[in-house]
Amino acid sequence: MSSLRRALSRLTITALATSLVTVIPASGGSAAPSPVAAQRDSIPIPGVDQAALSKAPKVPTAGRSGDRVVGMTDTLATKDFRVAGLTWDGSRTDVEAFVRTRDAQTGRWSGWSLLEAEGGPDAGSAEAAATQGGTQPLVTAPSDGIQVRVESAGARPQGLEVDVIDPGTSTADATAGSDTTSLSTAVETNPQKRPTIHSRAEWGADESIRKGDPDYGEVRGAVVHHTAGVNGYSREEVPAIMRGIYEFHVNGRGWNDIGYNVLVDRFGRLWEGRAGGVDKAVIGAHAQGVNSQTFGISAMGDYDQTAAPDAMTTSIERLMAWKLARHHVDPTAKATIGGEWLPTVVGHRSVGQTTCPGQYLAARLPEIRTDARARQGTAFYTPSTSPRRVAYGTGGSALQVRTTGDITWRVRISSKEHGVISDRSSTRTGDTDLTVTWKGRLADGSWAPPGEYEVLLSGKDTSSGAWIPSWRDTVTVTS
Image (cartoon, rainbow, N blue to C red; front, side, top):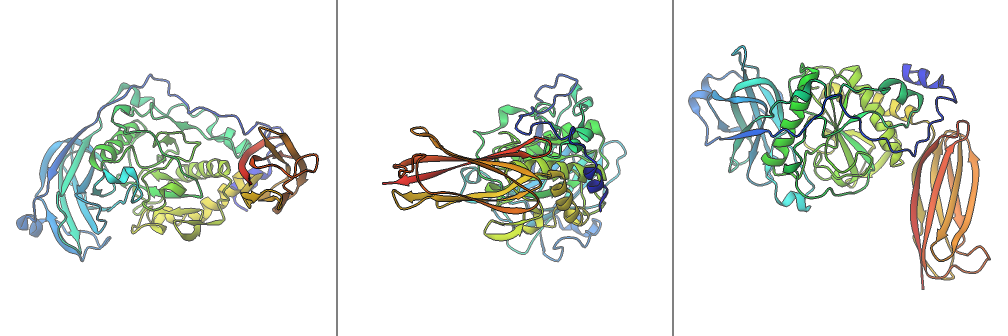
């Protein structure tokens, strides 16, 4: 038994008694943050500098390094920057880059970092129409020089550029994310309570560059990512790194907003990514083809090179337990995501041509799934009604749901015209399949006339009385 499951088994009924339907706002830092505008320079990569190619250090074996070199720069002096990334015209994903940077303080050059193509918004979406191809962002130490090698098995991409981004500074950066009130005890004493998620305002998001309103889909699962680049950043540097990624995604790639729904730093702090509500099914731009069916969390750092810290993976588990419970998803199950039968918690590599989230973080996904499930405790999984359309006088519909833990459940069917038609409740213990049938009739036994009828599934932990996320659907009776 893992240490988490042992800890959860010792939870008291009193500690579990907090209601889960309460909406808890994202926490605020002790400083007064304000928007910070980032500065981006775009440097063209016109071709292959053969002299630079011959004298540059060899690239690592990672990636598809046998591909043809289609772009190569000499070492280039730049303004100071913290985030870099490549862009090109169109939406090709058969391009990758190796990038090295010069430390602004020491003058030393880093080794090569592999930047893989990152798909972005789902094809055919309004957001995708205005975007261009590009790589994942590279997070660096403060740097003032860059060298880029671009490879592809195909033709050289048009409009090839490297963006270097200075995310600016803020006096609020030093205290952003310092409010970790009850992050450990609050979550572990109530597994489905929302963990502390620091707001966009805390990291200084410039909301003036964000485009349009958020779009909403559904959450069938979660995709785990990592960023590329340095792992040794400080607490105070995290807000600036967030702003750099945001600037690259919006003004470099042309996306509406930062691509990830949530980011997590190496200290275990969670940060709100894409706007629209972390409790809602906001469509991101983190995993092309499955954005509308998943939410994405990105671990800040390169976890192909080093192990992910325990504080980081624990926070991922906490987020998964809370977020997936809100959407009635079992972290250890499988679901149809993007037309494929996949685990509900996957690494980016499972839904895209990438090594993300790195070998070390990917290796911890089984543990993350299991411990997120244990943290959920009592839950409803994958509720559904069938059929959702019924011809008048021919029958009714059935709600089906899988329950876990000790649940007192309630299913209520109502309409605006007729009020509550059916109200049933009972208890279940353990992992069970529950079916509740409505015969398509009103309370007096007559057939329900054409119209819409709401199905409301609610429940609470039988022992503690703590409410769990409810679920609604509509059954339509046709004439």
